[in-house]
Length: 160
Length: 175
Image 1 (tube, each protein chain N blue to C red):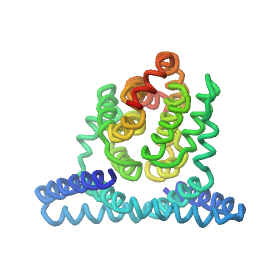
Image 2 (image 1 turned 135 degrees about the vertical axis):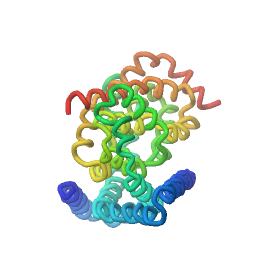
Image 3 (image 1 turned 90 degrees about the vertical axis):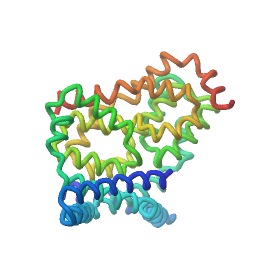
Image 4 (image 1 turned 60 degrees about the vertical axis):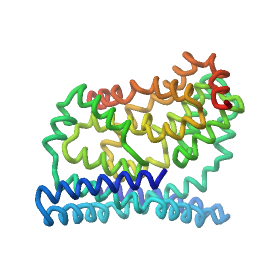
C-alpha cells in the first residue's frame, strides 16, 4: 500500500511540475479538473466504500472462495465475466468492489476476468454506445469481445 | 446516469445494512460503517494523488490531439494510432463515444474504431493510477499484461471480418 502511495504521489508531482513549467496556468487548470472530478464522484466513492465495509464485516469468504476462488476453474471465470457485465458505474465504484472480492479470496484469474469484462463489455457503457454508434457497431465490438475476458483470466492464472 | 448509479448503490447499501442488522443487530451495522470509513481513510492519499494525475492528463492531452492522430489513417497504422489515442483518451463513455461517432462519420474504419474503444477500455492511462491504488500492483500488472494484445487484435479482427460493411454501420447511426 505504501509503495503505491509513494509511486502515485511521485507521478502526480512530476506531472504537476511539468504542467507548471509550461507557464500557461496548466497546473492550476489540472488541479481544478481533478477537484471537479472529485466533487462529481465523492458521493459514489462514499457509498462504494460503505458497500466494501459491509461486504467485509458480513464476510462471505467461504462463498467467494467457493465460487470465484483460485480453484474455481472455468466456472469461476464464466461467473466473473457475467458479474463484470452487470457491474454498475465507473472505476471509482468498481475497483473498490473488485478489491474487496479479491481480498476475500477470489482468485487472480477470476479477478482479471472481472476487471476485463467490466472494462470491455459493461452493459452500462453499452447504453452510451448504442445511440452514438448504432447497434451494428455494438454487435461487432461486443460480440467479438465476449470471448476475451475469460481467456485473459485463464492466461493470468497460467502465467502469474 | 450518475444519479441512477448512486441510487442503485445506495439500494445495495440498504440491503447490506438490513442483512447486517438481521445477522448481528446494531453492533454489526456499526462495524460495517466503521470498516468502510477506515478503508476510505486508508486510501485517501492515493485517491487525492490519482485525482491530481487524472486532472493533469486531462489538461496536458487535448481532445484535438487525439482526433488528429486518429484521422483517416488506414490499415494497421490506423489501428495502432487508434490504440494510442484510446489509451490517452481521458473521461468516461460520455466523452469517447461522441468522439468515436464523429470519427465514424468522417471516414474512420470499423477496425480503427473498435481498436479505439477497446484501447480506451483496457489501456486507459488516466484510469491506471486509480486501478493501481485500489487493486494493488500484482492484480494491475497481471491484468495489463494479459490484455495488452487485445485492442489491436480485436481491431484487426473486426476490420478483417466486418471492414467491408462500414457503410451499412455508418448509415445505421444516421437513421
